[in-house]
Amino acid sequence: MPARSTAVVYGALSSAGPGEIDALTLIGRNYKIEGWILHQYLRSKGLGIVKVIGKSNALMKDKTFQSVIQKKFKISEFQQSVADYKANMTGGKFLFCPNEEDGVEGTDYPVFNI
Image (cartoon, rainbow, N blue to C red; front, side):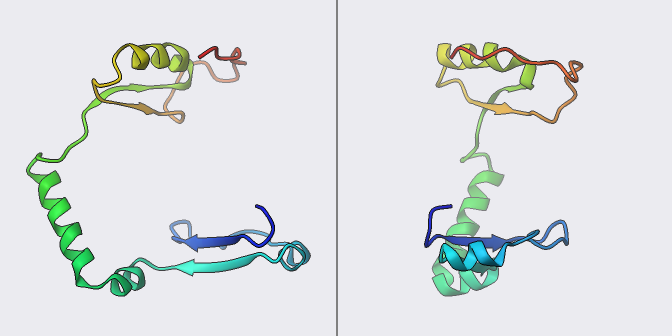
């Protein structure tokens, strides 16, 4: 991070702390660390934001607002998937799933020419 940056820490899904922090780097580069909690953020925005979220949820539930997934692809399919996306950019979203089983563990991938 550049000097005088602020890191925002949110979510504790793993129940683990943010890891090792070097105090000298933090002080020397004038870093700041802030916490972020969803309910405090919503409270600061007022009830209007809660209404907007409720409306958005309703629109997603009744399929008025939805995303079309055109293709899910693994790392070994990356280059072909980029070509597919370029050929049909308006057909829906492409989801990159690098953690899905690929059957090519330990393979060195070539440089991708996009």
